[in-house]
Structure formats: C-alpha cells, structure tokens
Length: 603
Image (cartoon, rainbow, N blue to C red; front, side, top):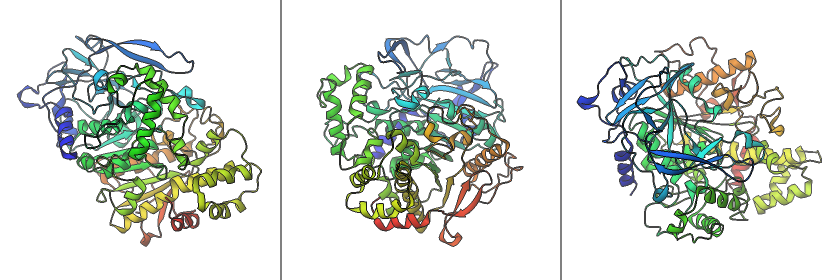
C-alpha cells in the first residue's frame, strides 16, 4: 500500500519533463534545467503547477481570529497574468506556463508555488491531488494563504492574517550566487523546513522562518512548506481500517511537498516542535525513505504520545457532535463551511481525549498511529531502531523547553499540593519517585519552575538523549546540542512574559533564521557570532552530513571561529554542543537526572 501511494503521489506531483520544449528566451529560464542544475535526479511528470481559485475574504465573527478565505468560483485570472508587472524577478518556464519569482535582499524567492490541488470541496479529508495546468504567468512573488487555524492567548498576534483551506503551497529561497542563465558547476544542497505549532497553527510564510538569510549564507536552496492543520489535516473518520489511511492528511501533504522537491537526492529535512515530530515520522515511514538524505530535529517532544486509532476516532466523534454531523456521514462533513470546521475543532480542543494521558492536552490534534503510514510511537521506534538509521541526524533541545508550556497553561502559582496532584495525574505509580527527585531542589511556594523542569527533562531532553544513544549503538551518526543562550533584551517573546531571561521552547529560531528583529530584539555582537556559528553548523550539515566539516567549495564559514562538534558517542564521553555565546562541546549537564528517567522506563 505504501509503495502504491508513493507511486501515485510521485506521478501527481513531480515536475514536468524538459524534453525539447525546455527553452530559454529573454523572458525567462527553463525551470527544469535550472532545478536540475541545482538538484540532480529531479523526477518528472506530465502536468505543470496550477492555482485556479478566486477568493473572497470572510472574517470570522469572533474578534482576534484571522481572516478566512472561502472559495467562491473557479477562475485562473487572479492567479496568473499575461505580463510580469514590470518588477524585478526571475521567470522560469514549465511546459504549461511560466512562473515569476522575485529578487529580494539576500535571495531569489519563489513564493506560493502549489505542490497539490486545493484540498477543498469533495477533496477535503483526502490525500493531496495533482495540480492543473494554467496559461500566462503564475505570480510567485508573494506568499499565499496559510492553512486554516485560529490562535488564542499570547500568540494571537503571531497568527497569520489570512488563512484558507486552499493552502498547499511552498516557498523556495535560492541564494544570490545562482546565475539563472547557466547551470551551476556543482549542485546545491536543499534544506526543507517543516514548521511547528502543535499541528494546529503555524505557517511556512511566518516572518520568523524567512529563509532568505539561511539560504544565502549557507549556499543552500531552502524550501518552506504549508500542510493541513488541526481537523482539516488530522480528522479520522469511521472508515474501514483496511482502506487507505483516513486521517494523517497533514503528513501526506508534507510527503507530497517532499516528492515535489525531489526523489533520491541530497535533501536535509529540518523542523522544530511539531515540525520535529513530523521529521521523526518521516524517518520512521518507509514511503518517505527516498525523499531525503538526513534530518535535523529541533525540540522534538518525544514523550507526548501520538493517538491510537481508537483515541483518534473518539476525538472525531466529539468533533462531529459540534457540527451536527455523524463522523461517518462524509456528505454532511464535506458540506460544512471552513468556519464551521474550525469552530468545531476549537471546541473539541478544549476536551481531553484520554484523562489517563494528561500530556495530550498539549497536542489535541495531530498524527495518529494508523498501522500503515505510522506504526508506533516515535520514542519506541527510535529506541528499537525502527527508523532509517543510515541517515545522519542532528538532534537537540533548548535548556528550558517546559517553561512556555507550564507558565502558559498555569497563569497562577502552583502549590506543593497542586503540583503533587498534577504529577500523580501524569505519572501515577511513579509520582513519589519523581517528587523525591525534584521537590528537594525547589523551595519556593510557587512550583511552576519545578513542573517546567520536569516537562523539559521528561518530554524533550532525556528521551532525546536515550534515542541518540540507542541510535549510536546501532551505528547511526548522531550529533546532539542544547541551545542554552538567554537573551537579556526585555522585548523578546512579545506577549510571552514568562520567557523573559529563559532559553524557552523555540528560542533558537531567531538565531537560525536571522529573524531576531521579528522577535522584537536586536542581536548584540556576541549573539551575531552565535547566529553565524549556528548557520555554519546547519549549513555544513546540509553540505557534508557533518556539522563540523568545512565546506570546501564555498567560503561561507571559512572566517568563522567554529568550535569542533564531536559526534555523540561513548568514546567521546557523550559530548553535546552547548550553543550559547562562547559555544563549546561539553558533557551533558543533566546526565544524572536523565539516568533516573531512563531507569524509570516510562518514555
């Protein structure tokens, strides 16, 4: 089934053949020749890209929510035009038409390229489908709508302004060293970013993930993808389990985007939080094996469990109750407006599916174990070696991952009694041992810091360490890091006051994408050095599969002081890279507590 699905998606989503029609003229460059000069082994297909919908903006009634785009009629005219609008930017050709990107500071960018047809109408809650040809020039000079989502709480201001069910697009960033008029002397590596957001929020076009700087600095092609979120991406119907996977559509979207980019070429996939979970699933999925060469997993929440099929169906039934549909009445479900689906998703998200798995409250929607695409929990797959162990992996966390979750969930101090209740709810018969480990270290009346450290250790750090050691024992090449730098600027994490002076979940992203200004702070000179070092490590990993190897063909890191980053192995004393001002390799600072969690055996 997986091989059939992979073949189907490959036929649907790969790029048109060049053949004799791959021509050049004053207006543009042959797309396939250009891409093949960057990416060898690019697959082919018979249809070019298309977007063929005309939209009308309809605002959600509740204040603070993003605008929702709903499809009103079939039209190609707003997606394409007969000229290039007189603006700067490369124009590339496909068999079915031209695509025009834009030239910006530090990179060429092709925004909003569709990698699948819009998953709307009868195609809602179905695997992604091939796109349709267009005429004229497709305008790839601006981002398209993000996938359907609504934000609450302190992150509301970061929510995309425009969202739509029609959202299966990707953005491509090409470094300025590329000369579109001639092939490159050597191929450039490709880094594909999968955004996080608990599988209910986020966007490829979020300013925090602007790929221009990392692309130009590291001499790589950077691709950011959108994928369906929440109920749109992960609703499970009551269909026969022997049929193709019902649900996990967001993961199939990611796979389709990877198929669009390439097959059997040197691609690095990287992601943070839910994006790292996605990367881990692609490392576990056999049908994703040929789509990438190596992986970076940033802040992977290993211990937040994927749902079972039973739990996913229970969530679906709860969702359906809020829509006045039955979960098996696909006609009724397809008739719902996007606003109605989103509203039911949000109401359902306030309920806990399984009260005996308390941590699920941090990820209500997301992938589930369907037995075919996804066969087991990520943490068990990595410990048992049920993943693509031959692929190099760069794996790490921030030093205070749990702060954002605990302080975001508990807006008032938590007493000893309350913390005991919560720990017992999560860990049950192991709670006394855990309290014995942590309580003596925290004397304050408010124990949210203790709960945050437990989340950091149990969900992120220690299962990552155990998985890295298991992979190393099986011969895998693994590099580990901890991002430990604290930004002193009080403007950081606008709205998230509890992350001031903390290395919170996602704290490394402004340094990796050079997007500190988006996070409302300015990098000091030592922090600029840290940012450059991180870009060198990630870029070197993309080029050579080793973060410490200097890239011979380019000079992007030749002038950087780059401390050696040893592979994670017992022969090196299990050294990890501490990414901070004055980055250095060190023995893990929480090895003793991680030994405790390993022996407890409850990841």
